[in-house]
Image 1 (spheres, one colour):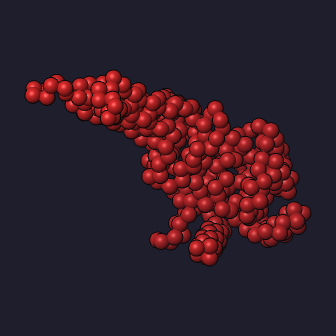
Image 2 (tube, rainbow, N blue to C red):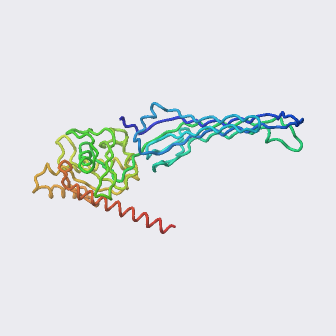
Image 3 (tube, one colour):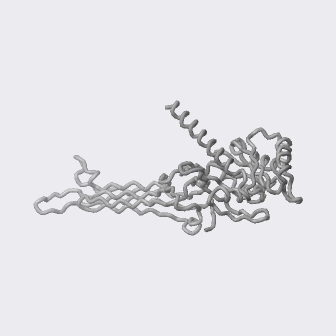
Length: 348
């Protein structure tokens, strides 16, 4: 399935049904009276978050969504039938904007969460509603109001706890393959990953988290170079970033320190929020270095970067050091969750 994380759709709520002008014509009731019924309300359009789909590709082919119009009122004070609402399924993590005003209408992050995006029109009133002591036979009814019409911009942001960040060929896809059941394409050349990938990491039967891999970021990404900028938004919801660095890059590529600094610069240009997220340095591909030289090589990179945060040494290809890293991530995420719950309890 093609991964699409942006789409534009048109939503049209149903118009309200018109009120009816009618009069009774009954035997033995010579003067009769008004009996026109109200119209029905127009149907509304809702977006509903689901885990059954993970891309917006369907909206490229089905871009208009119309709810049903309310039925007109009828005689004998019969109210018209309400138009049916429609519920449009979108992937969990979809952010919705009104294209015309650029207003953010909502962010659907929980399965089953609903968002009203187009309100159905209100029903018109039949002439029975206008009867009064001085107007016994009103010749008046009201029209139903128009339903809302909107053009929406949908933007999918993947929901993950941990995000992988790094230059092309840093080993992000190899890591997600090593620690989860996700199977992104892996090859010995840059830009193998073309779309984001999600994997569920289970550290034991009851504890797990979601990890996200995006295409590699290159220098100039904040100005639009490469694919990384397009997908950096998928790291926005993560709680911690793993900054992967290839400790033994090919001669034609940047040194580990240069690569790490370029990534830091690009995410700082793109978003302060992303740049300020907790970030752990993960020195990858240690299998390319003789075991006796690994510690010195890694320490030299850390010293030159002046890195103050957590540092891990791994080989994603051979799954060396990955288990320890995953358990530490799980502990970090659980501590964050506990702190958030404690803060909420204090506010309550």
